[in-house]
Image (cartoon, rainbow, N blue to C red):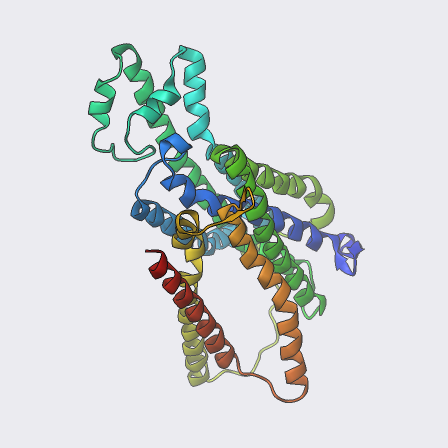
Length: 391
């Protein structure tokens, strides 16, 4: 066994704790940015946002989050076939750092142009009265620019295009970086353990615990920063978290991970396992159909759950009294409440299921899925009643 695997902390390889820490900070940045994205897009330019219509903002959030979960399959393929997991994670994390900080560029570029040309660019952009950050120039932009002094029109138009370009470049970089990191980090955790090592499941439990903790803290920290200091500070804080993840990975990876993940799996010499009993095609078909059914159910569940970062956020922002005394609870905190409840309830539910199985009263996974979907349906129904009352 390689020497790097003998260095343990609390019974697990130090490399596993490193990857768990990297994933914690990466999810902190991911969920923190997602928690304020729709609020930023729909906030008026006077409030530092883009002033998009709700449908436009929700469509972008849907496309962004969908690609964030769809493309890691491609990223994992590239890591396994060509780059190796370690290089894929390093490149992906670097790209995500740049993307997170570039999300703050809509505030930085107007400020920079103001300093260079001594022209009130930010005030002029806000005063245009049109949405910012649109790939297709919104109606009224030309007329609004014509109302400005001729000497400053070009500078304001430049700022508008820089704001748009930086925003969509940031979105693209985050999608690409996440695609390379998300599935690859999980694979690296497993690669730290030999086949049959009983600690692997425990390591993955801590790995997902790190995800939950990152999601919980992100809404609290980044949500407060964005509300107290401005959207661009919230995005910058997400960039800081991603920078910590990259720093930990680059600084400690060679020491704690050794050669794990350096060679693409397609190029490794793997001993062929002994032949196993052939599985009947009918069994394969049945298992595939069950897997497809569970995947479709999860797909339906995620559609409802991800409204937490879309329609639910807009409803909380506009139609819910969030004040406690003189303090207004930031909308992203409600997303942290969700993660907190998951962290608090999951251990007791898991213990209850284990006790039932020990007594021979195991609950089939189909019934667990059905119960979870029923709870999700009730939650959305309750929110539907609340929305109807508010409207």
